[in-house]
Every structure is written in structure tokens, then in C-alpha cells.
Image (cartoon, rainbow, N blue to C red; front, side, top):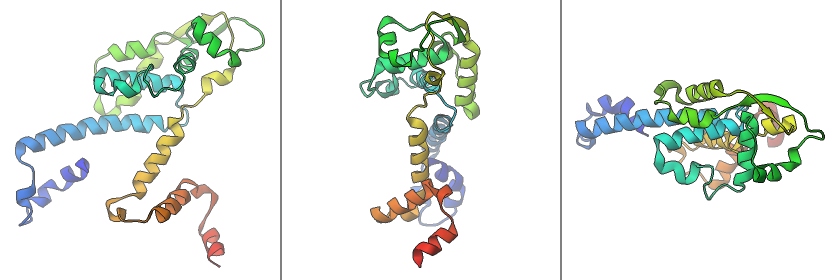
Length: 223
């Protein structure tokens, strides 16, 4: 909505009858600043939808967001109330970074322990904390820059316990959920604000599963 306003603001001022509704210059500056912040945060939504994004990457992004926007800490911190299993999530993050697990984390992560214990080299370090302390990244590539810098901070480390390779590849729930929400936002445009829930569900279902059907499938169902 903010982006749409900025795009059509000049044209609106030329229309009699609605020019009085256009925000003043001071308010316009605030909206432009807000739009820049929203664009920066939108890069996080895009990064969360990437199929290769891991739990460690998500934690790195969330820690950076909390540093710049403390008000979001209630929901994005590792110990937030909405986190179902903080120890398990913390273990996933440390495994992804190559860090050593605490006793409690190792106990919660025992199901991923390999049959034999041996030294394993991986990527480790305090990527999340280091990236959080860095200065603000360019708005255009905010999330990508955070992930890139965070991975640079990870150095070779040794772990006394070896875990299954699958542990590093466990995807965060947000990958699929964010893609679904983005698809729903594309469907629920202002022109469809009065659409019936049943019709919206049908359109959303077809859009999410569009790889499984084509025009011929619809014709067959119609017949």
C-alpha cells in the first residue's frame, strides 16, 4: 500500500477532489522512510522462502533483525515464548555453524547422533553474534549481505561428537509457510477483497499446486 501511494502520489495531486487527501510534505517524508524500511525487511521474507535456507541461516537473520528492531525480540529471539523447543532449535543452529553443543542441547539432539563418535570438520564460529554487531547493511541487499558476512565468520572447528548430515539440512518451517503466504498475498489483491472464502481457498489451492495441473486438466474436470 505504501509503495502504491509513493508510485501514484504525483498523479493524485493532479486530480481535483482528492488532492486535499494527499499527505502533507512532512507526512510524505515519513512514508518514504517507512517504505525504505519495509523494502529492507522484505528482503528477509525473500530469504526465508529460499529452499536452501537452513535453521542456522534463519537464526542469523532473526538476530540481526532483533538488533536493528528490538521490538521484534518478543517473537524472534531464540528464547521467545512461541519457540516450541528452544534447546532443539539451539542445537540445530550450533550444528549448522559447527559449534559444540551444551549438555542439555546434546541430550535433546541425541536422536541425530551418528553411530560412531569421531572428529568432524565443519563451519563454526559466532556468525549470528558477529553479524548482529556489524553496522547496517545496504538496504537493497540487506538479508543477503547478512548471510554472506555470517558465513565468512564461520571457521573450521572440531566436534567430539559426530551427527548425521541430515541435521545440517533440516529446513525451517518458514520456508514453505512464507511461500504460501506470499502466494496468498498475490491472490488477495484489493480487487478481490470481497471474494468468498471458498473461492479464495480454491484459487489458493490451484496456485500453490500449479505444477500438478494445466488447462487440459480444468477442461476434463469441467466436462
